[in-house]
Each structure stands twice: as C-alpha cells, then as structure tokens.
Image (cartoon, rainbow, N blue to C red; front, side, top):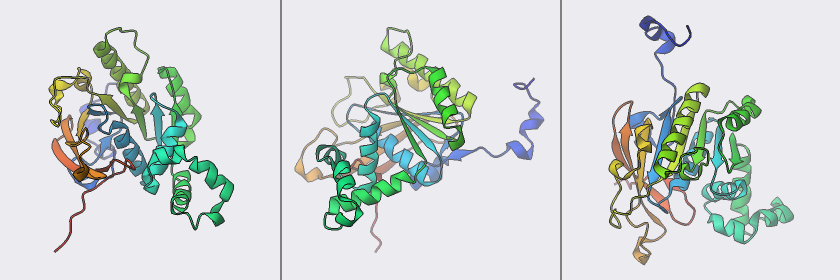
Length: 288
C-alpha cells in the first residue's frame, strides 16, 4: 500500500532532506529555512496592514530564486495584481501606474523615449524583469478544487512550487453560512490540495476581531479557528498602519510574528514597509 510504509523507508538517505522554499528574507529564513512543500502557511492581519503586499513580495522573492509561483486573486483583477508587482519592482506607487495609464504610455513611446522620464524608464526595466520571472496570475471568483487542479495541469510544464491565495475570506466554495466555519472548511480543502499536489500554499487571511486596541498587535487568540489547521501562522502588524502622522513618512516598521510553526521555532521579525510602493525589505543597519 502506497500510503503505509515501514519506518525504515523514512530513515533512508532518499527521504532525509525536506524540501523548503525560502521566503527571501534572511532574518526569517535563517530561523525556519522557509516554507515546506505540502503545507499551508497563513499570513493574517487586521484590515489595511499589508497582507496582499506581503504575498506579492514573497512571490517576487521566490520567483527571483527560480521557484515558479502561481498568484490567485479572489479580491481584484489580474491586471491590478500585475501593476502591484511592477510597482514593487520599480519602486513606483501602483496606483500611479493605473491612474496615469503608464503601461499604455510605455507601449506608445517605446524604449527610446523613456530615457527622459524617470518613472517610465524604471517601469520599462520592471516590465522586462517581471516578464522573465516564473510568475503566473489567475483571477477567480469561485474556488473549486477541480478548477484549480485544471489550472495546475494547464501550466504543468512550469512546475509550480508555491500557490498564493489572496485572500481566504473571499473564497466562495464552502456551503457553510457561518463565516468562521466557512474559513475552516476552505483551509481544509487547500490543505488537502497542497498535500496531493506537493505544493506549498500561502494564504492571506483577515482578522475580524473588533476588540483589538489601535496600535496593538493581534494574537492567535484573535483569529477565528482557521489557524488551527495551518502549519505556519504569520501575524502581520504595522504599529502606525492607521496613523497619518507626518513623522512616520513613507517607510515604516513591519512586524512579522511567526506565532505558530509545526516544524520548529517561532519568533518575531522586523522588516520595513513602503506605504507608497508596497515594497517590504530587510532593515538596513549602518556599519560604524
């Protein structure tokens, strides 16, 4: 029987190494090595903190390390996700790319005309970079395992290693009327899909609790039960997410708490978040 094996099979050299995919942030990867195939990683936060931005940055990081990824959006369109990818890579506000119709301007002017326009020049380079990355995007409004399976089969030659789901609360598959039960059922479906297809699935999830004081980081206890099925749970927090004080500026602290990890240690990590470009980077320390 394929599903039942003697323990000695798991002690052989062929089964010792566990394949992980690095997140692209050394402070996190040095502790956990990355996310594992066949497992679910949940990225949760209050509204407006940066769940989608986190997934976008992780997708770019993984693709830059030659890991093919599929980004599935249930919240918006594939075009807007593409504009956000370009904004992160180019260091441009994605809303400016959309508002000023910069992709169309770039198409009309061509490479020769972008030298005098800094934004178009940077966007041109970002388009080239993104075009060469193994990134696939799908916009969906209804999750069905057979449809997702079909999409993976359609791009089977791409050897997708990680799927990004944005976001859990917009997945309309479960027949449960209660939101909490619906999220839990959908997580179970994704978990089974990850195992069956040897893929890592990273999912964004909104914390609904209204009892968290402004500026305070949420905890596992503030979640609705979906965290129980995840293999890893990252809670995202920006202390000044709801503050428009001018001293905060564009770049601010982005706190990632690995609140649950079935495979090892947990911890708290601090990165830097750009409100304008949605780029999330390692903190830079000056050497003396």
